[in-house]
Amino acid sequence: MYLEHIGFSKYLGQNNSLTKREMNILIKLSSGKTAKEIAREIFISPRTVEKHIDKVKDKVNVRNRLQLIQIFNSCLRS
Image (cartoon, rainbow, N blue to C red):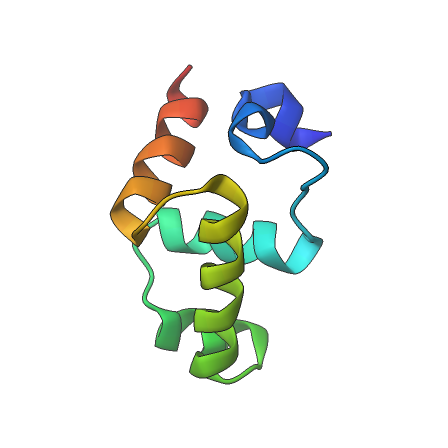
């Protein structure tokens, strides 16, 4: 799977994986898009995007978006 290929899966807690929707949102978020922009693109509410981001942060065990994006982008650069 893509997460294993880029080395991101090692940051996920045991028995955690990202859904396709969470992965899509993480990719868009890491490219600099806001929750509102992401919501418009995938036809859901900004609050739902925020909930997905919160779930990903929990799975990766980070406190904020910046940490999440830094980890994800570092995996992409590796």
